[in-house]
Length: 623
Image (cartoon, rainbow, N blue to C red; front, side, top):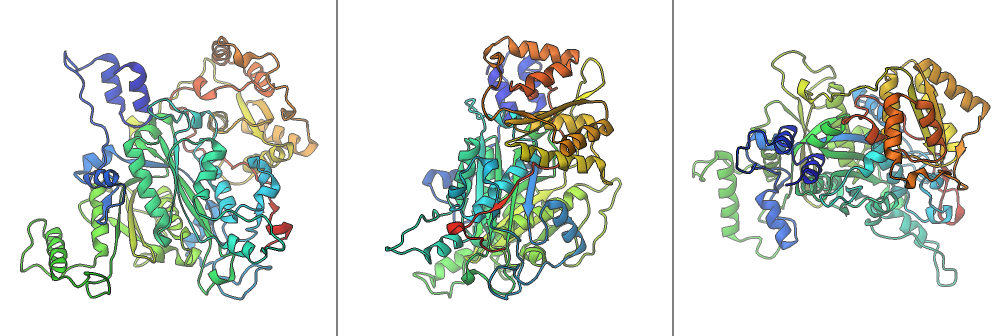
């Protein structure tokens, strides 16, 4: 195994630091080869892959043996975003969850009907210019898909993964942007609305039907090269999608995975009392890769399982009344409970749903439910109602926020308050389980991330500690000014402000370089606030590369440029680097920053969207 392959496997999370050190230095190897243990799919996954179908029995999302194996396959949630009723972002959603708020309301103005439900506002609004989509084409895209595009982008930005760090997520063969997209979506109400106005006499363009477009469009727009697939198992769709994402990560099919879903109530037939809407997304990485990249970690995914909870043997169906099938099912459940061969004295069979839960706990390396909080669709009923495919992503997000804030939200049998502190308290775990209307149940075990001293990334500084180079970019000057206003509000507000070095580093390495650019060399956050306020207030010109003319000296085509940029960086010549970047030279900041130089712990505002109403036939659409 050569050095390039070793580093590639390390980046993809297949090797830890000790294994890399042993391979690169030859330490401890003697004269024989180094034996590496890579994550492998479980036997059930391998069987399912061989026949091309999902197994009927629960399939664990990780290796179902002991805890060390589960730890080796841990996956980190490094980015999250969402939009839920009464909560335009996750900060508002967390306040609602923490306070036990119920979001039920009448439909927003402009939507027909009086059903009390859980609704999003302005679902017809979208920013096509940000994504480079023609407005007429955007009007034909299902609003569920449009909302997911914006939310997925915000999740990638939350992870600091829309610029060079996205390119650095490579497959085993070196293909960049190896990110899988796994989604669940609600019914195609938008196509139903369009069908009401179509006729042979007056044909009109129609929205594309099918849920395949939800992940595929995102993959196409961002050039993502991992698997891209949609799942429909009703309420459990997003949890099943996450289960598939874990399997893809363990098999090395992608270096990271974006999981999410959306549901809107656009057609009158979809609305009923208690129905709800929502959209959310989470970005997953192998834990080893997340630590190497210096990512902020919301929580860990320890394991998952999926299975179908079938009706009892008396339900109608060919062969359903088979005595032998019933006996075998009972024996299997008795053996599972007893940990060995079935006994005639075993108690009555447990509910079939318990099988999936036990498989998820086993995949996570957890011996039982002791110390594990279990939450399901009922935990988010007051927040999103009966939200179909959005139910699972809302439940996952609520659980991840509890673990990240270390504050339990109110739920069955417990009141809000802080988790206990001190020695003897291991990581907290929440098992999120949702059963779809058709019987497909999925269970996902999340765990609080407790960083160890050895895992803290070492960030060597430049030759001299001093000013920082702050960069912002956007597709248009209006977008740039709106995003600059968000950062000015952060710096001038009453909330916590990230340290200047983390803020600047996160923007340099984690955000995409777009055509309209603002840059400033500043010594502290006060100076940065002044520069941003002046830019927004006076409308100072920005570097606008939309008309061409980027990189007029052609430095990007010269191989010696990388060394020149590195020398400027090490010497602290930030004004010169600022000028080059504003001229359109795309700088690989991730290569200049120290290894692991992410923006862990720096919560940065998302890029601003300038939304406009887009609906069928140019109509205003629902509110």
